[in-house]
Image (cartoon, rainbow, N blue to C red; front, top):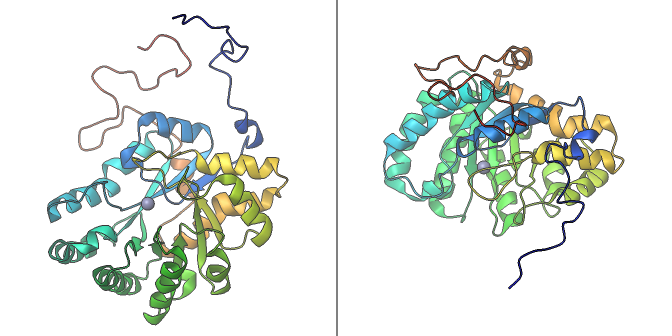
Length: 328
Ligand SMILES: [Zn+2]
């Protein structure tokens, strides 16, 4: 067998060439209102910062497998307002989170009850901008029970709600999520309905809710479809997120979508609204977002400590040159 092959021009290109989408978004800043950074690496944080991601929201979610006790929820919530926020800050990114019991784990009633008891200890903490992500997965009775209970909690705390809509029976599940939120007296302007698609967007907007779109390879929306949605529905109350997590996902989905929108001729003002401003307007209703903090976090000192720990490991220097061949 012969393994030799002709080198193409592409093989010979220097690796340090910037991806061309960055050209389209030079100088722009982005807010990703749904990204699970706990399952991402420091490389992701660096790449996001380099692409202009200034601030993010990390919704509480499940971890890919069911938790067996309330203490792991407690530690997870603590890390969202503690270590993970610190870690983001080390890359100049302002980190917020939403706290809630996710729909999948709402189906374990005993555990769900215990989680409901600790939620009030976390939702009033600094930097918690909503109750989320909550809602339906399989649309079971228990999911409905804890969705309703958490809507009440959000209402009491005067916090926005971040709704995860189901992948199966999406249209009906989305309608049901909105109906129940209205039934509990929530103002649609306080509710961000996430994971929309072409089937759900019109009704979500018509009823006065925020419509969030997740750009997620293979399963949810590609960003070419997102460009068409904005062309058709405009930029009012629409926001784009990556929902990047432990699955095959892309933490650069927001800047990449902005670049594609720019290339497709969408107005810069509209791009700014759907990739930055609208998410801030929606979640700042929590009283927890101050844009001046985005600047403060930019003055990064990677040797700073959080409870005695830094992002640096034994003897590492505060900043590394990512384009250098030698890893020191
Ligand atoms: Zn999520």
